[in-house]
Amino acid sequence: MTDLRLFGLPLDESGSNLSALKFLFSDGTGAKFRNAIGQAFQFANEVVYVLRIEEPSHKLELWDQAVQRKLSRIVSKAEPCFVPGTRLFLEKTETGRDVWQYGIHVFESYNRGGQRFWNLPDGVIRTPTAIIAIEFDHGPTIGNWARQLVKAIRSAASPKIEGVLFCFCVDAPKSTRPLFVGEKFTTAFQTLVEAGCNKPVGIITVDQLELSNFSKPTKEEILIFKREVYDQQK
Image (cartoon, rainbow, N blue to C red; front, side, top):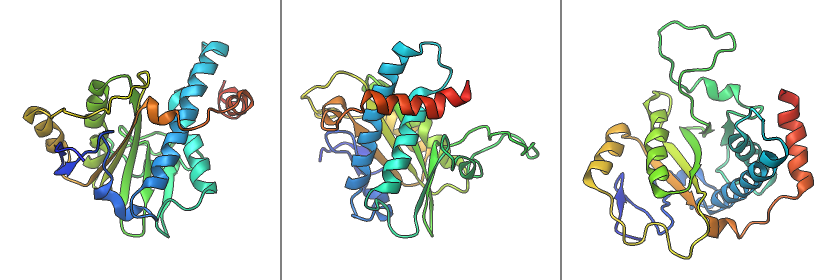
């Protein structure tokens, strides 16, 4: 672990730390869930690469859709990632409406008839005792990581949310250089982040080198995703 501090937590060389949320995970570390996240990111990256060539005019948030749907399937079929009694609800899957109640809306009165809240997390991990927001994002640089982290912690403003799990995929070409070695956050950045969140935060950062450990989806798997998601929503 490096001496970097964020929310009072040291980040490892990949820019990750799940110790604040380890109570969520059946293995006590989150390693199984991190593996599932890596598979979902690899699937989404390949979906975007292939379908942007085949269907350049698509109107879906392809990466978001692919991450959430792949992760949902992995978690439902694999050895349990979470402690008993815990469920994962993701906004772009069939469990999406279960996420809506945890968002933040602008006005005291609003129309519930099909309208989404002003700000929603990408999903929630619901345990018998806590609701943790989960956010997914990606970008090519650590600057993107920092900006999206600040954006992700907005979910913590909801009184129903008791923590945030931020999952970020680095899109840049794989490198042997660990992402955070030798880097120190500025006081201004730490102040900005900590001002926006006084609740537990877990961070998973996955770069292209780590993604190379996961097999890419086949063309048929990608076309099945396209039929199930994109073709149905044209």
